[in-house]
Length: 448
Image (cartoon, rainbow, N blue to C red):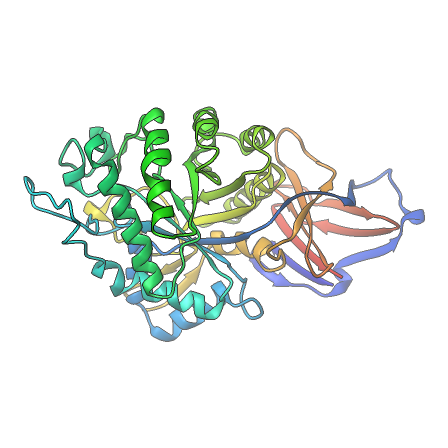
């Protein structure tokens, strides 16, 4: 049995088999501890993977520290045996809030337009983002790639401005040329040996924020998806699946309404975790059981503490319990100042690693270790199993159990109580696995 623990000054460290007790169900004492009954034949959604994003900031930060440190980090990220086996990447189409310079692949001076996309230029991403993505794919060929746009080229918008707080929208006469722009973006990745598996229509389409973005009314998003984006992808022979929403779970009613009108053109939902409950995803899943349900962006904030590590873990668990098929964190890396970003905007996000560009060293953070507890042993194609929900209201003790394609099982138990250890008894058929989960601790179990 593989047993990994996070607590106090311990971060995802392997434990000996003496850490758990295994015995027959007939010897189970139900008068003490928390019972977690697992039903191996009661299966829910399948798992597609876990990952993070090579934002412009992330790629630049990783390019400015010691090469040996970066090589070790890439193995830790993506190698299934030596590392934690991340298997999904979400990259930005052009600039986002995490880039030192706002850009698209078709920037033109104000007053000029390029309807034939003759000035389409993918060279910015060829410097660092594409090479890092290719490197990840060499380590783990099973990686799935998602792309998300923050903004169309400014000349396509009704206002020649970057920031979504200014409420710029895509001009309707530019719907076709923007769809062609998206096609050229996907083709640019594929020319580099990077098939694009998923594409969201727009990152945070209803936001008014102080960084690059573009606003959509739901009916316009529907029209663009049905009449422009999907037809253009099909015409180009691209297999890329389209995901709807790409925003917080609190917007699930809008997501549901969009999905009702894009059933034939959209393959699933992408959710962020910044506002709204994980359980909101389940409401959408009940309405659209045959669609994909992904968490496409999630980031914790600073400082890097054990309490925040367990907070991330419990939320990942609740999303998996609510129907999520993948969980993608935000920046895979940031520098010691949380950037670099345009105008040093501080959105309080953290990376999986911190790249100290002054010392050249890399520090692994809470988001990395939180993902590790899931990605290391939850294989693609694993099925989430029924298990007793131990805390329905306050998330203090949560668990998720999956059955892997190779027949093994993996369980993650998170105890966010600051003071008390919890004894948990996993009851699976005739077997009981008893484990003490420390206060503010996480335990991952993996067994055949």
